[in-house]
Length: 477
Image (cartoon, one colour):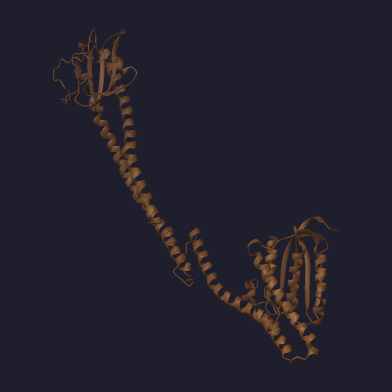
């Protein structure tokens, strides 16, 4: 069963909560306890030092010279919440502040036989029942009472470990409360995730499923985020719109290609049938065979262009790059159209730059680009008008402009003119022989050179195409 992203988020959130709880329960509790233990042991050492100083000043020849020990020690345990033992040099209990009945032996004459002060020299404190003198574990520190380099006894300060544990529990409870507040505040992250990520992604997923089933008119995608998810949603909407428009484009494509193939085939079939049944006399066969040949050439040109475009879909046109002069290409191409221009009384104006540079490109493909652009310019120019071909340099590139003053392109068709077989209504009315793939070929060739081609057109005023080519390294003087 597939887990949703929301389930994965919940698993991550729950894991975070459990691991955080375990961290506080075990690691933080032990860390706090050890910290308090070290601090309390240090305070007990300070307390023991004060007691040792007081005892040393009060005793004479023995520990029993202190008449009333309560005057010295009774207040200390109230301040530090600890207990004090005074032992003589024979480890006999002289005095204790403990009145809690925590001692295992109520006899006042207690002798701690196994007491060894050397056990406390390497470590400042020990945790034990102090040789079974106490019923529970205690934190103990020991300091010797010396006078004139003679040991008279020992001061032992105790604190039940239960007090330290209770203090650590109190601090840990604060940690638990803080952690609970953090978990509650972290729900803000959850609601942000739900609102800004999960719900938009859910809409995107549903929309993608609808589009995958061909329902490109699905309007349930209402994501308006101003972020990466919003960009994905906008791109998906745009894709669905384009796919929806592609159906109409496909119908137009099939209609156009059918028309462009049917017209010459109908002419060829009609003329051949007329010659075979005698409608066209033998003396006129040559005339009509030339028409049939012209229509066959048109079909060949159309199929060749389609074959080229299809072969360029994945790899693009194969380029044979060389260094050449663009001015010579323009001059030779213009000569090809002199006859067509004379028929429509069109004036061709050529403008070359003052500095002459060679370019580095596929000369044959660039000639094809220029040929198609000039062919279109002549077809859609008004009689007795002019066409301007301008070459100029800018930066490390050379730009070629082909501008006519004809009917122009409708604003709604400018983005579509690069599509195969696309023809505007105006062009279909003015030009019956065009295949509709010339500009598609131009676009593919310029794109293969990693260059750009732009079009500027105003309906009823004219059209200008501008494409760029990189300069060659050498300069032609």
